[in-house]
Image (cartoon, rainbow over all chains, first blue to last red; front, side, top):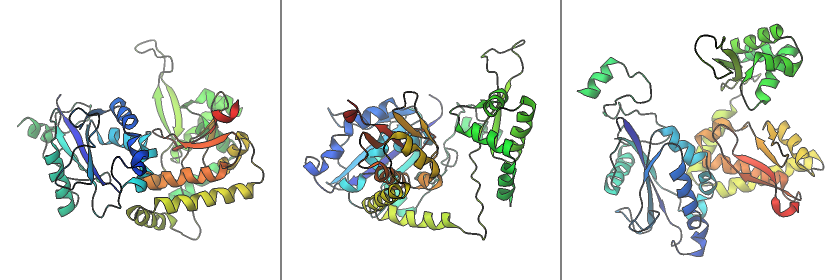
Length: 173
Length: 219
């Protein structure tokens, strides 16, 4: 399990409670979406609550009406293909029906050593960092192209890309 | 002016036919296949295909078609497919992309999805009205073709897949907003056509929308 993975958190402020009929379009799709995620190429891990198949019961310091979604992927492209090139997109396009207009960054990603399981606290801290300081190797969004090296993670190459001798030294040092 | 040069390369009729043939296929195309597809000799096809590569319109890679490798497997075939580079020429210079990107960024930030979808449905209806009667998948295909979607009918003729996204650059930057708009546009176009429906079916590398014969109305 050498190498690095991409962790992501996205949050949403519900317009109506989870059990409200007006949120049903969202909640009724959750199992399907999670199933698509679990079977997507490059999927590594996602957050689930106790005795649950999803994370909708988990609350954070962000607020009682803010639900979270958190997962780990092998690469940015594998995450992109799930978010925007799978059945997930059909739910995403209807986001305004179920979630408040975000006033600040609502998703964040960051590199982790492969095998690390991020905590919700760690994820919220990354989101707060992005909100406070803008994109950086520590916390960024889809538009950004920071690498694990930028984030100070040593990378043992597993995908055939030559990282160059300097990076290899830092990776093993 | 590289864009103009790329487009000028397409002025030759044989070259343009070869380009259109290659980009219409759902796989990478060998010289032999392109030559047969257009009805010209292999040498002539090879000459023009490489001109298209030089101009940046096609890209090529070499692969053995037989699956064999090592000595005796033969020379790898040169395979051609469309380049991901967009070419655009406007005289005089216009920059609608920057304007569209700014507008989309603001609409995305303000979550104007619902309003944008409503406008897109109206646009689709208007396109349908302008096109005259549209009653079946073939007619839809013709309209979408003119709008640049490069529609391709599945083998059983029941599903129209859209190979090219006319809003590609915008859809990469604002996917939820732009793909939602795109679906609404096609929905407006096929609305009320009996037995047809548009739906989101995004897959890597193609447009997010599919038009299909709805099963409810087939029987």
